[in-house]
Amino acid sequence: MGVDVQFLGAAQTVTGSMHVVQTPEARVLLECGMFQGRRADSRRRNSELPFRARDIDVCVLSHAHIDHSGLLPMLPKKGFTGQIVCTPATRDLCAAMLEDSAGIQAQDARYVNRRIARGDLDGDPVVPLYDHDDVDRALARMVTVPYRRRTRIAPGVEVTFLDAGHVLGSAIVVLDVEDHGATRRVVFTGDLGRRHMPILRDPEIPSGAELLITESTYGDREHDPIERMDDALAETIGKTVGRGGKVVIPTFALERAQEVIYALKRLRTQGRLPTVPVYVDSPLTVRLTDVFRAHPDCYDAEARALLRAGDSPFEFEGLSYVQSVEDSKAISGSDAPAVILSASGMCESGRVIHHLKSIIESRKHTVLIVGWQAPHTLGRRLVEKRLRVPIFGVERDRLADVVVLNGFSAHADKSDLVEFALAVRDRGPLRRVALVHGEPPAQRALKAALDAEGFTEVRAPAPGDTMSV
Image (cartoon, rainbow, N blue to C red; front, side, top):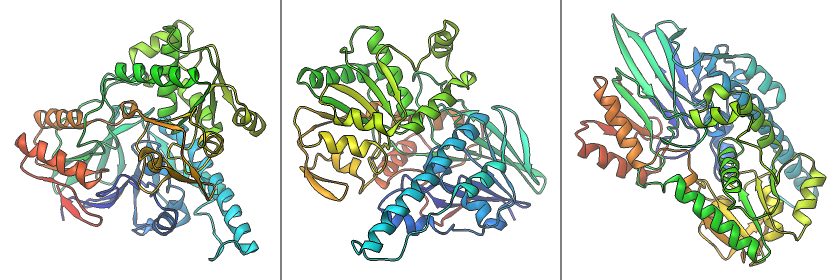
């Protein structure tokens, strides 16, 4: 028996990351991510794990985004008794994000079940996937390993985390597996960050890889430089405030919110931001930004220099972090111009829905999209600039302007992904490449680019497919 990798999630799609590495002595789960999409489809996919949890010896987590970590509480609930291994920052972020996920599920279940009880909806009562006790049990199984420290995590398996540069604590997972006297090295990028981005360090390059499992989210496109994003951000805010409107920015609480806050700080420092209040209206974002403050060891040189000078990357004049529901309602009900960052990033839940409801039917306002939007979400409908969009179950005229700035993405683009794969090949006997966490058009484009660079085996596995090392 050799070393096989079975791809169970984020295979030919961009959500629900989940792969099982079968070694001669252990079964290693890479990620346990939540599938995000249409609600009925998501509930069906997330309610059962595609493997027996008790058969997994150890789980390795690359980073804290919910599409990579969101089903971790299902592991102990289904009988898993091993450890969940991640970086210290990832563990701290998961403590906030998984608690938030459990709370959202409970809230959604109460809402749907009330509507079923009133006869407004057909169907069976909704039960949350997991609760806060399940989250606590998952967190109790988390063991942290710092970057660049090779650690044995299961019989015949060692892990080393390298900086992925994607979000705080994100890691490239290097697995060294004993295989009948030989050592096989599997490298999994998780989500790979971009080079020369603010706050975080650039991705590191592993050596000695035989199989590279790489994300491919933006394998068919190039990002605009971050400097151009600052210009577009300043222009969008200036135009909207000039006509007396609000700019609502749906943001993912982890990473994207902090990047936009940092960009707004740069604009304010340069005198390019209008004198309007900026609100971060997401309790989870507030909590996660506190975690960022606690991990300056993950920052790049520029961000560390700010901290040494006593200047937080996440504070500037006119910026307010909003906690209470009453304050959120007051901001939503006000006619005064403002910039509002609010979760969720795909506009499917959270306070951002209330802000969108208040602005969507007026031309003076702007919805600013700064992240990838999954199919069938409200965010995707806004990106497509549909003339009518559903908010709280009611179809509404979309008169607000919609501006899309994909350059804020923390995912590597096509050039970054190709250059990373080439660098890995230069440092080891790389024979096979598996493309995951990408939609088929992006994967086809990236495969063609890698084929042109002389890679001999590049595959985009379908769900359930297996590759050997």
